[in-house]
View 1 (cartoon, protein in one colour):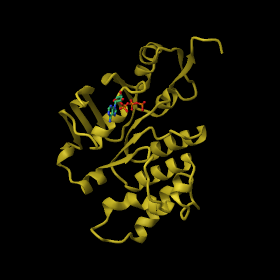
View 2 (cartoon, rainbow, N blue to C red):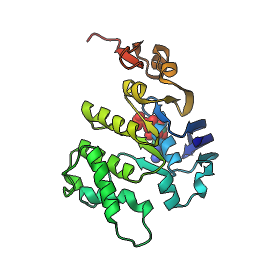
View 3 (cartoon, rainbow, N blue to C red):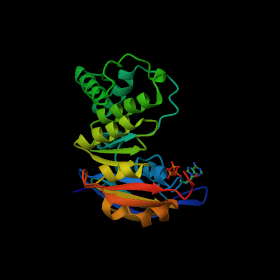
Length: 258
Ligand SMILES: Nc1ncnc2c1ncn2[C@@H]1O[C@H](COP(=O)(O)OP(=O)(O)OP(=O)(O)O)[C@@H](O)[C@H]1O
């Protein structure tokens, strides 16, 4: 079953075309990564999908329904979003921040229930921040904030989660931890990823963008090749299949003396 469908999407800012004729389909339960060089349009595509931007042309369907015909609350039940949050202006405790994810499940003016709190605590525990409930969000480190934002998005218990570089700021342990947490959810995942080895390890399929165009969509084995890495980033590499993971692994070979 198709969970997300993007059909011939064009998008421009101030007459500069940023995305050109993007077509993609994500099936229920898939874990799909979005990769490409800096400035290729990853965040802009995701912003079109989570309705910050309106496409110039083309359509986006969520579970068969046009996204712009879904009301905000229904949308929040269908799609959770995790982005870098640099603009939190008022402070909240960590638990209150996570409970914001429960908005879609509440009626107007209804207070948070015990159930909402239990769900928020469950996901806080899942991201390794049990005990942080009463800490102020703004006092957290960059990595801790990221994990709180993930807990908030997961608390939404939506069918699809869209993430923009969720592992930014994180040390290696937490980069893998976040991907592991996402992998074990019963959710469809669409996430931009900078680290190609992480994309290769976790994704069922990878979408490749370059200069606003979708240049390839396929399994890690189909996409992660030395030719593609050279085409995207101008860097030589060796790619071999890991016997342990059965996934491609990249050794980058930058063209300078180490
Ligand atoms: N508000 C804006 N005004 C003008 N240009 C913009 C705006 N937002 C994005 N762009 C341009 O659109 C292009 C795509 O940007 P986008 O942030 O989507 O890329 P990205 O692939 O997410 O990059 P990165 O990997 O560096 O985060 C870039 O050239 C960027 O400068």
